[in-house]
Length: 166
Image (cartoon, rainbow, N blue to C red):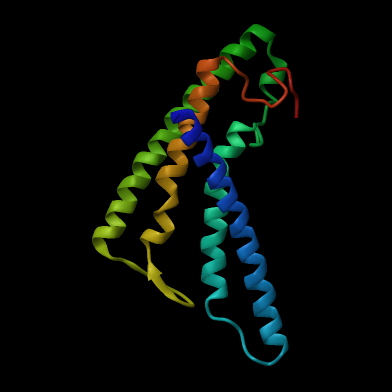
């Protein structure tokens, strides 16, 4: 049951990420069309696009880690013997889990501080800063979980295994 909920959460976040791309498409096309028709620019296009870019990135990240769709540079590890590659891979996973967990904690603090301070972002539209910080703790926590699962299962961080070379 927990696995099903967790999987739906990961896929749901990826779907929201895809929807944010569509939102940006409609905003930009609508804004350009409006300007071309002499109706002026939409003041909300730029700030909503900026928010959508952030949401697109962080909401898709846990899914990309799960599917090994993330960027992994292995030029150094490719030179090492296979046994050392496994050790290095485990170290990379452990450091990545620690880093993403730390970012999740910091982003929780940032989100709570943004809610307490009631800080506003003033651009084409005014909106509370916590809207920017909202997806960060969840996404980074799930990235840490996905990386932990990769490490616990003894899997490779590369899509085609540890021998993959970019």
